[in-house]
Image (cartoon, rainbow, N blue to C red):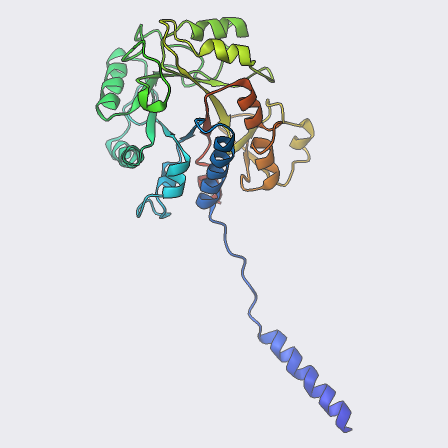
Length: 327
């Protein structure tokens, strides 16, 4: 073998050896919890740059309040700073079934996180699911004793104003300019039990709740600025806050942004349908294309909420990170 051929052969052998010995690079797994924190923080930063007093409330997903993924460690300061309130369903009633007390272990676990929120200046809004008068009374009294604002919903579908109590718990005529001043709230996002949107708006307008938590849309159209302005006065004359519901962890096939072809040809960020809620689909919420639907421009979901004059937004399916962690 001539000298040049020997050198070339040796180089090839060394090159192949280095390739065969190289360790494949593993893709870093996603931190789904931090992805959700980042999403909420970015929404908050965007909307507060436009309306500094705009209220951001995150429902459930309480594990995000702590940095450690195992539910302990230091508070997640950036996340806590980004939200004004945290919603918690089933704190005292409804965890296993409506009108059933939440197991003590689960209740105490939830309370430990709600107290983290309160201790960091974040208001707690509790929705318990119960209709028996004794349970309703207990729910309001226990939550108030802990400094939480609460609502006892007698329908899981959140489609009515409960007949009991006749007046909102701790009803008052004060002007409510922040969550910290609120003593009660109404959570009513499904107007289907009302004959028309006019009847729905009139029903909630004629109440004395300090905070109204409603859907921003009706039959695909956003409520008007005049509608929202009318709702900002309680029947007794005091002013109140009107907060818009917005799901950021699932896409809903009845929303204005939905395309029917997505069911057969879904975008890359659209995941499986929620088996418990027909028409709701899990989303890869960290995907820029989904986030552009939610916020960042005048035609986004949040942009429409801002234009309608809402005081804030109630972010749902914050706990979507659990779905992806379990897969």
